[in-house]
Image (cartoon, rainbow, N blue to C red; front, side, top):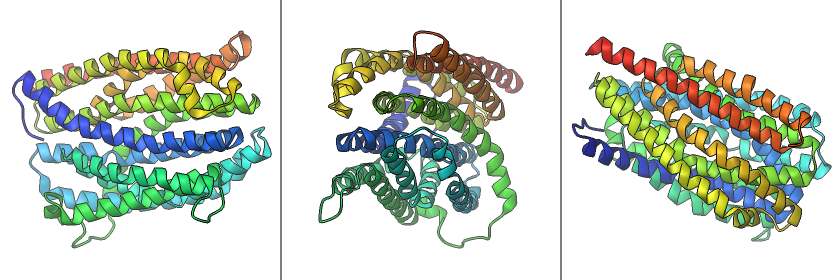
Length: 451
């Protein structure tokens, strides 16, 4: 990161940071994308099982990753304030915190998997795949959390191409592992959807090892000497990071888990309906990586300018990011509308699943716009370290507006299962509007205070 003066310079730096993050996020989600597609080729029950398993794993995964994402604005602001000497201690404590969170999630998950799955009306094969998909992917949980902590540190310094390089190395390996474990190659049994969990866990370990090697040996990271002179865990620093990270993590959790809640509610429908819902949500989430990447870029660029107390520049980056997100939403919507049949056939050869997937994709067009507007605003607020209010706004918009309205539409109108998706549109739109209002208030306050 470096200071910019003109809009042209800002656009150039914004794109330098954004493009590697975008490639990284798309590639990371491609792992889930290929998990879903390749599991679907193993059968509708395997696809539905991975859908249920992902619905339990992904909100927890993204919630913890959200907590660890606090490292990006912390590092960006320390860099902008020319206090880089504090970074090594901060990153080391973040790694300790990553391990602690992984242990807690593992223990809690061990007690909750069976009770939660037992509450759902699932076919035996679907329940079996879901359970062991979660167990196998969980084996790579702690390496995955440490990797994301180190990635947030690397990205916070503005070196987003490093994260891109790591994921571009591991993605082909993940596809290969999927092929081996899902379909039973090299003399191994065909695990079906469970094999996708095994493949993901192995990929998480590879990402973890690559990130450690880069931080230890590659400039400029090696100059921080992260893996030399380890200090003891400092609970005070953990609490400091958690105060920033927990609201971020829970905001992400509330947004992601609403999709999981819809999947659970759809469990009363047929296996084909669950499979179609998962296929559509998987592809829509794939497109969501674009506004999410813009949000992560804004956290870094806005955080850097806020750390240096250049609030006019922070505001300029903010609107540049929002405009980019809205423009891309039109492209994403067009893709969903024009190529709905081709997208549906990626996931299944079952005519009923294809037909249902196409109908779900139509609703996905509309919440792409809410995501494209709301996600960048969340990234901006994280750059300001203004995270507590976004936590409450996310809870209210997604769970007190979106989910109840979806349940009403599904159960008291002719929309049936599609009513839940219309509820998602309502919740995401409410969240985007309220967060935008908070952003405008905060920017005006900061500019008036320091101008």
